Length: 423
Length: 110
Image (tube, rainbow over all chains, first blue to last red):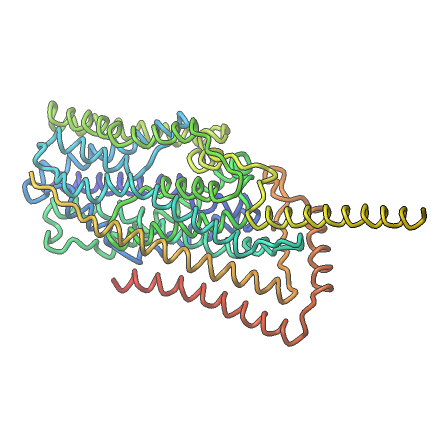
């Protein structure tokens, strides 16, 4: 009983730490574009993101239920088996997150969490303990489909925004007004982030409480104190993380115009919010990146830099199996050495957290180790400074040329007539 | 191992997200267009001109404000038409806000 209580406490502490790093890392997803286009003062943007992440965590619990009651068949496992597995899975996720953060590789906190849990469960319990149907339909497929969906929606929204506000008489088009709108859309993204990412930690803690026998498995809803703890932690992480990320802005997203940023954020927020309502656990980073690429393509004369897209995609694909491998290795230590394995894992976790803390104190912030994913996505699309004319502009240019030709011909004819008359 | 995937849910998410985004962006863009028609071209300079973020310079912002004032002066509409455009612009912004609130309400009540 005492060991179980200790393990539950360790799992809760680690899960909350993961929640903090999630908020820390993902501030940029919500606030990168409004800061890059100058819509919000950096300090205000980060504070707003933190508050809305807090509010968002209370809006829906569908994603939490997906994690606590679906991916792992907790009914087939006992508390003493399952708690070390969750513990190992969390260490796998945090280790992979930290490693990618240090190396500046694109990654997803959410997929690291799923990978860690799945890897640890396979090694610590069995393959049968994983509900692959749920993993496929609620994690893998949404991960593959959501960035593409967000990209298509952002593409359509950007096209609509530009088409409606386009002027053919070279007078001011008022697109600057999208800067105001970005304050609301970026707030929506922060809210959406809270509805999806904070839920994942709630799900893990609820799973730990269920397997420890402290919560009824029939009621997979997270308890109120769990919701409060996760909401406050992700908000705190968002607030603390923003400062480092803001310093790197301007390097990757200066090309994002207000109309484009507005459309990208609307697409990101609507995709995440709709997915959260259905309990799909998405990577908000991937969705935000898909939207930035889609909205870039929605501008005239844009071209995709496939090499950059490829680099981002490889990072995404690698996250799940890599975190699974680390989670499996941590679970292996527990299987081999029992309680000593848990102790080794705990030491490893402390070392990772300490490493993360020491690394964050070093003043080496650049675009590679902070907001790499979203900024990289901004660079994945090349937009021409002078875009080609639209069909209507081409028709106007042709009509203008025709008018000039006709005027020239009429002038020549008049000149000829005058010459003949003077003869 | 029996794996069942609810493909309809994916289609529903895509459709809901697409409709929501198109409504929000569409209404907001129409609002801006009508605001310009009413002779009130929005010129929103960045709140901070920092070294790291070079969106537009202060000079460019001043030039944009000047162009907006010139366009407002040359607006061919009557005062009544301008007022109508302005009312429609605010109505469009309101619809945009209602679309967002409606979406959030659907999620909370689900």
